[in-house]
Structures are given as C-alpha cells and as structure tokens.
Amino acid sequence: MFVSAVVLFNSDQVVSGESILALTRDLCKPATGVVSQGNDELFSRIGEELPLTLHRYASGSQQNGWVVPKRWRVERATISHNGTLLYDGASHTLAVAQLSKSFKGTVDFNELAAHVITDEKRPDAIIYHCAWQYRPWDIDWVFSIPFGEFSAFPTGGRFEIDLETIAEDGEMLVGECFVAGTTPQTIVFNSHVCHPHQANDGMAGVALLIRLFQWINARAGNRYSYRLILAPEHLGTVFYLGDRTRDELELMVSGIFAEMPGVAAPLKITSSFLGDQPIDILFAYLFGACGEKTVSVPWRKGAGNDETVWEAPGYEVPFVELTRCIDQFEPYPEYHSSLDTAESLDSEYVERFYLILKQAVEILEKNRTYQRRFDGLPCLSHPDYNLYCERPDPAVNKGLPGDSEKWGGLLDSLMRYFNGRTSTLDIALRHDLSFHLLWDYLRKFEEKGLVTSEPAVIRRHPVVSRNENSLTQGR
Image (cartoon, rainbow, N blue to C red; front, side, top):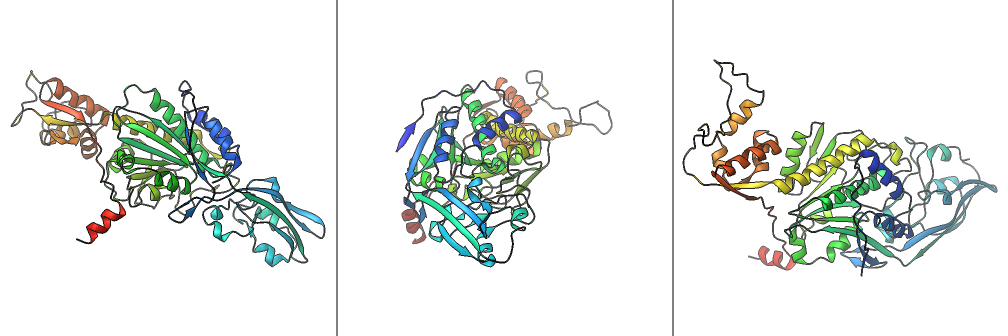
C-alpha cells in the first residue's frame, strides 16, 4: 500500500551543523519504534521537509523469517517495595524494554535483577533494549533502570511488579523519497528511524540526509537518480527490498548508510562487501582529500547497519557505511541510551559529515571518462595546446609550486588513461590530485580537440536470483 505526500521540497534553508541539529531535535520528539504510533508523527514531520512515499507493512507480515512486530505501548509499569514506589517505568519511553509482556506479581531481588538492564559505567543512563522487535518469539519482560537508582534498591524482601502492556496489530512504515535524474541509475541513501528519542544513532543521520536531499533536488541537471530510504533498522529494509523487482534492483548501482555524524571522532568508512566497487573508490579519494582524520575499515567492521540487507544475495547493491563510530563494540559514550541527545552532539562534526556527502554527490555527477583522438605522444608545450605541466629541475630553480611534480608526473601516464574507461576520479586517486582541478585541466584537452569525454558510468554486478545461482553451481 502506498500513500504519497504532496508537498514541495523546502530547499531555502541554510545548511549548517546547527540547522541539522535543530531538525534532529524535532525528529527525536516522537516515541518511534519498528511499529509505533510515534512513527506516524515522525513521518508527518519529515513530510514537511520532503515529498515522501510511505510503504506500509502489517504486523505479522513475514519475509525470510523476519516478522513485523505488533504495535506496543505501556499502560502501567511500577516497581514497589513494601508499598513504596521505587520506579515508574511509564516515565520514559526506554524505561520498559520494547515489546515487554505484562507481568503482575511479587519477586525477590535476584528475580527482579534478572529482569532489569542497567549500566554501571553510565549510572544516569536508561539503556535502550530493542532485541524483541527483531525476535518477537523471545519476548519476556524487562525494566531499564539507571544504575544510580537501581543500586539504591533494597536487596531484601519482596518487590511488587505491576506491568501492563498492550500489543495490537499495526503497521511498519518505510519512507521513500526519489529524485529523478537524466539516467535511471540510482544512488541510494539509507538511515534508520526506529530508535526512540536517540539523536546520534538515528535521527541526526535522518536529519542530515533530509538536508542533503533538499540540496540534491535543488541542483540543476542531476544525471543520476537518488533514492532516500528512511526505515526501521534491518526490518524496514528487508521488507522494502523484498518488494522490489529485479529491474528496480539492478538500477540501484551504489548506496551509503549514514548515521552517527555528531561524535567528536574521525570519519569512518566501512567498505562494500567486495571492497573494490566505484563507491569504495569514491570514498578512498574523499578520505584522502577531506583534510581531516579518517578511518577506513573492511566490510562490517564499522558500526554495522543495513548494508548487510542491501548486499544480501539476490540484491547485491554495493553499499558502504559512513559514521563517526569510535569502536565497533563501543560506538560512542551515549550509545543506545537516554543520554543520546542532540545536545550531546558537535555541530561542527555534523556539518563536516554533511559536506563530505555533498562532495560525494558532486564528484559522482562530474566524473567522466576520456577517449583520445590521436596516436603517439602530443607535444603538450606546443602553443597550439599549451597544456604542459612544468616539472622541477634539480639544476635550475624554476620557482614552481609544491605540487608541480605531481602534475608533471601525471603526464608520464596521462595519455594511456585516455582509453574510454579510466575516469577523472580514478586518475585523481592514483596521482593524489584534486578531482576538481584535474577535471578543469582535462576539459582543456577536450577544448583542444585531443579527446572526447563522456559521463563515467557506474557498473554493478548483475542481480543473480536463487534459481539462476543453483543452475550456475550445477554446471
């Protein structure tokens, strides 16, 4: 079922880290989840920024063993001791584990502790428990209590638990925004919307991609098409991709999962499954040229997100993950807790994250290949061309700029790159040159009639269905 929001892009805002965080604060307000009433409020707010198509998947729907859970809410959630209220789990969205079942009775301290999650290292944090949204067959009941409070609980006597929750059929929502270019080849951006009230691990990435797509839509003459998918982590992407045709999948030539932009930590890129795809080459260049500390890690050694779904067999969309994740198992201090607020994020780091994605789009749009119109070696210093890059001379000080040897060295190989396959980006990365300066330089070769150029085309491996795979393996 599809519901389209008829709104216009709002592209007049100045995009800064602060403007992204302002939107993040709005997006953090609803109590979202995989299936939640708060998702309607969230997508209504996003619809004020972007035109969205909403895909709806009913509770109980199944795809490869994944199940859309029920919509769930807390009616009462108290822990008392000898009639004294110790904790009210209805006071915060995270204070009762998502999809907890009802329980009413008395327990001793050890049994209570078995149904409590807490973190001694973060004594003020309410920890986010989300596992049952993905494994509803394991549902039990759990309170999330800050360690500073739980450590003050008495350890003797009995505790009265009054936990009433309601689970009912609902719908999982997946938001999609599509910006058509002159070619149907599509670059996908993805972030998740299911972590309630959490900024860095969720809504800051969403807000940043909203601002990016407003800019993409305002660009004149996009060659690629661009698709933004905002969905509950894993589940939303599983069901969205399960509905796509083979033709649709093959048009998705590259993708980027973006989250955790606001930690004061280096940018981190996690490679695609194959690791040598055009999207990997793009970020290898960007990380070398961006002027800040960066970290590149192999497939699934970053934070870990929906790239496993996009790259799953039968889809195989080359997907990278861009974050500022500090460590794979301790991504940042406020991770999966009530401490993850917009106020904990650094607007400068958010803005730099946005700018590198913007630069990625600009390079994809400008990248070209070149075909020579000559045989042999042109004399580039001839006045008809005037394209020679002067090199340092150990015997004569020519007063050349510091990068002159890079540009001079380029000429030793450049003529061989005019083969109709090697792109501006390939050359810039290989010779450690500015993509944009190189693009301007190579345009002069075309103006002089030495080469023709065409937009570089991203080629991906064909989608192979399970039946085709079986036939191939049987040969």
